[in-house]
Image (cartoon, rainbow, N blue to C red):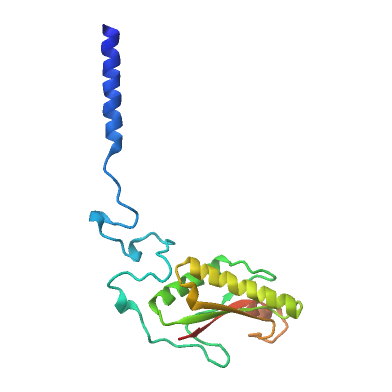
Length: 186
């Protein structure tokens, strides 16, 4: 008899403890307290809300007033260049930080279109540098897309070593020429 009471008590305790684990249902990740949708600013950093998703009521944050790059040279404009290591097309942490700022700017300037131009230093063949410049431009574009910028707003091109920012033949000049430039248009 004692054994049976002990088993019933154990079973009852197990049922009570399992019932306590259920707790409240969690809201979907896209909903905040009370089931209201969260704003992108409420999301953890690095969370993408999709290609150029604009939250309701944020229409006023979009700006149509911005500088564009020189149509002849592609130079100038509101977006800074990013730089690459020698013979590399992978993004550095510094480049990723700059691209994250570019993504925020592009989210606020929905009329902007960007051509990502890949450039190289003077070392290497023309063909090799054109291919390397293209890989650099694609790496920058793909990172912007991963941050929520619509792919349709971004183009890539490569100038290889044909359009140096600094024509000198030195380590400093070569470092400046290993870049992705962002030519902004409407």
